[in-house]
Image (tube, rainbow, N blue to C red):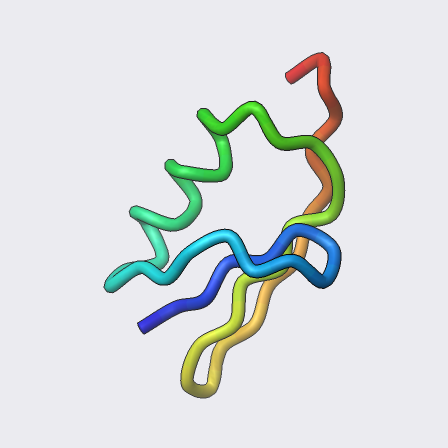
Length: 50
C-alpha cells in the first residue's frame, strides 16, 4: 500500500503508484504531495493552476 500526504495531512492509501498519482493530479488540493510506500518515496509540488 502507498500512503499519500499533502504536507503532514494524510489523504488516503492506494494499492498502486499509478492510482495515487492519478488521484493527486485530479484532486482540488494544492501544495507538496508526498507518496510513501515500502522501499519507495516521492514528493512533488502541485499549484492551484494545474
